[in-house]
Length: 608
Ligand code: ADP
Ligand code: MG
Ligand code: ZN
Image (cartoon, rainbow, N blue to C red; front, side):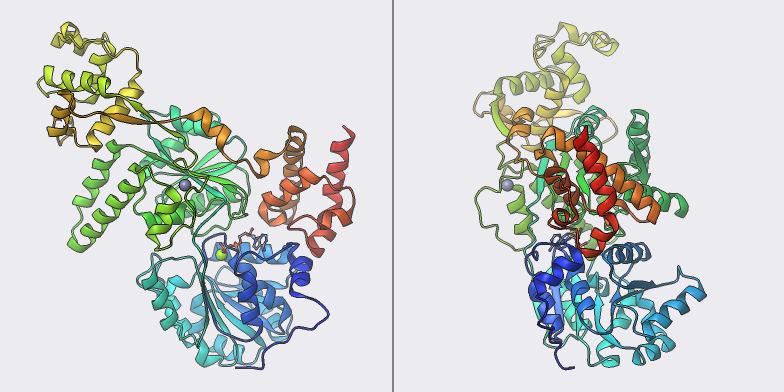
C-alpha cells in the first residue's frame, strides 16, 4: 500500500464537500468510506440505489493526486456520470467504444499528463495490453468498480467482461480498490469480494431502507381509468410505469398519448434508435412518463423520478425493490404504487408453468408466491421488504406505506359475499365473473335475457354497488379460497368449502377498502408538495430555466440542479449569490455558472 494520503489541514472534509458538491452534510456512511479511501484502504460497500455511492469516490478522487479509474458497465451511464461530475467542476472523462479514435487518444493524453481527477472506463479495457501498460505509466489514485455485482454469476446482471477486473490489485498493487453495489443478497456480496481479491477491505453494508419512498399496494381495477386518474395526480412530474409484456407497454403508452399525457414506450423489442431516443427524452424531461418493461432502468441515473407504478405483478421481491428504487434518488419524496389483482396471477403462472428448466420453474414459483404474499398482506410494506433482505425495521409504524398510513379500512361484506355465492349456485357454477356481476347489478344485456337470468331471485340485488366493487369482492373470495375458478379461456366460478361456510353464515367476510381522501390528508407532505402556492409557481419557472440551461449544455436537467435544489430555491428565494450558496446542491462551480440566470428568474418572480 502507498503511504496513506493525508489531507492538507487547510480544508476540512465538510468544507470540501460543500465547496465541490454544495452539500451541507454527508449522507449516512459516506464519510467513513471517503476516509477509508483517503487512507489508502480497499473498500467494499453495499448501499441502496440513491444512497449516494458516486460521491464516496468522487470526493476522494478530487482530493488525491492522480486520476481515479472508475469501471462502469454502461456507456450511457458513464456519460451521465461524467456530465454530472463536470457540472461540479471535477475534471472527468470517459473511455469507451462510443468515442472516435482521436477522442480516445486525447483522453489518454490528459490521463498521462495528470489532468484528470476521474476516468470512467468500460471493463473490457482491462483486457487490452496497451491500456494496462499505459496505466503503469500514469499516476492513478485508486480503482473503483461501480455496479460491482456485474462480476457475479449469481447477480441479476452478470458481465463476463468484469472478470478481467480481478487482476487490478496485481497490476496496480499500490492503490486502493473500491467496489460498490446496490445488490442486496449475501451470496452475491461474498462472490464480489472474493472475485475482486480485495485486501482486508473496509466493509460497509448500509441499511436498505429508503425513507423518502412511500409504498402503496392498490387493488387493480379493470380498464384504463385507474391508471389515468393516478397519473393525473402526478401531473408535470417524472415517473415510470412498469408493465410485463411489450404489447401492454405499447398499448398503455398509446392510450396515455391519446389522453394527452407525454408518454413514451420502452422495451427490448424497439429498435436501438427508438429505444435510445425514448430514454433520452425521459432523462431530459421532454416526456414525463416512460412506460416500460423491466428492460428499462439499469442505464439511468435520473434523480428526479417522482413515482414508479407497477401496473402488473413484479417478478420477485428483489426486482420490485430494484425497480421501485429508481424513484427518488435525489432524496425528495417519491411514491411507489403496485396495482394488484388476483386475476393477474393465472397469467403469470401460465408463463412459469411453461418453463423447461425445473429448477428455474421452482424458483420463479417461489418468487411469485412471495410477491403475492407481499401484495396481499396487511402488514407494513417497508418492514416486509426489509425482512426480505434480512434487515429488521426498527419502528412499528413507518408512516409511509399504505398500511401504516391507515389507508385500509375494513368493511363487513358478508351479505354481499352471500349474494355472489348464491348467484353462483343458482346458475350451476357455469358462468364467469363478468356475467355473474351483470346478474347482481341487474344488467339488461342479451346474454342475461337469453338465459332468463333476469328472472333469478338474485337478479339486481347488488345494484347498490358498482361493478368495480364486485370484481374486488370476487378477487378477495378467490384469494381466500372461498371461490375457485376453472382453467381455460372462459374461466367459470364455483364454490369451495370456505364459500359454503360463508353461505351458511358460519364465516364473515371483511374487505379492505382503500380510503383515497384520507390518503391525501395523511401522507406526510415534504418537498414540492409542502411548498406554498407562490413557491410552487416559482418552482415551475425555475424548472424552465433549468431545462433551457441543460439543453444549451447538452446535459440532462438534473445535472444542472436536482429537484431538491429547485425546491429549496423556490422556498427560500435567495436574492444574492451568498444566499444561494447556502442551498443544498450548489457548490462553487455551479454557483459561478448558474447564479445569474436563477437569481434573475427569482427576482422577476418577486417583482410580479
Ligand atoms: P447511487 O449511485 O448510490 O444510486 P448517486 O451517487 O447517484 O446514488 O446519488 C444519488 C443522488 O444523491 C444524487 O442526486 C446525488 O447528487 C445526491 N447526493 C449524494 N450525496 C449527497 C449528500 N451528501 N447530500 C445531498 N445529496 C446527495
Ligand atoms: Mg450509482
Ligand atoms: Zn409501513
